[in-house]
Image 1 (cartoon, rainbow, N blue to C red):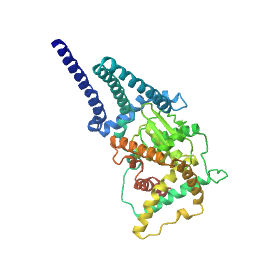
Image 2 (spheres, helix red, strand yellow):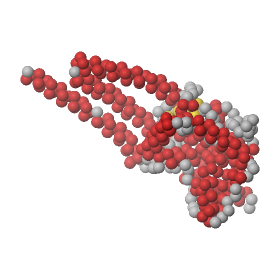
Image 3 (cartoon, helix red, strand yellow):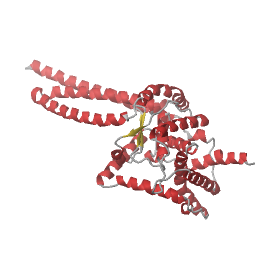
Image 4 (cartoon, rainbow, N blue to C red):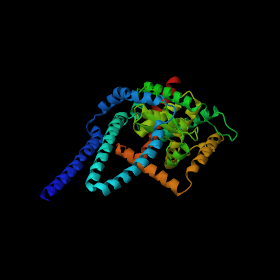
Length: 401
């Protein structure tokens, strides 16, 4: 009896010891996530992102490029079914173990399962940091595109808005229309991906952004109609080096910027503001009218409210761009996009999915040091004014002394 008591006591102690050991990999995972931000300098991060990251990313990029379907999507769909079956099997096995052998063997088995999950999580965090996490720490793209920021007058803001409006309208005139007067992309999805890769490589070289030159084959998501309820148009999977794009409705107003945004992530810029900055500037510099249209539209829409408020504050009269006859072309495209977007606003469940997706994305971004979460998708409006004054206006003045 005494020996049995001692055996039970040693067994419990062994169980507690094994449980305590699980804390070590948890601490290790947290250190992997936190230490780089604490000890890695900006110069070291720039060196990693420009020199080491492209080499590390090459195998995953090459593997992803072999497939024309989304590996991420297939793993999520098949994996979810597999995990559900595995969960049911685990619950049934756990109940049988408790009935036949008691609680100790059950907890021993549970500890082994948790240990395997922690090993997988540790591996995932390592890959994430190498493929994405460390790129959060590099020099912002805006600082390389614009060498100095300054206070701007109202005239600077209005001139920038006018430049964006004129570029948007000029590009829109080059696009064909369907029978409803709505413009569409000029080529197929694969051609858009090829052009976006070449475009971003050119912009990276021109502005010395030090991005990876690895080709990134963006993937259309087969279940885009279902994915649309999350209100996410694109996603980069750093564990596979794969960019995924929602393609149930490829609208000319947003698709080019979304495509370039995700490719910018895969080429080494993790912050959302950086990816958007690169995407928008790449689009307006494109030879393709549909890409230029989306880029200038993004600038115009994001800058219009700021300039309108500035005009009211200064007592100025802002030109009624949205009342101009030429803007009716743009308005038709906006209405077509909104009609499609409203499909995903059809009830409580849709709202819950969208809210959960927003909260999860917000938590992910803030966990990676992006204060403001999903608000960081919006590039500060003064950047476009800085860019216009330094890169466009100055160039025009030099060409026309």
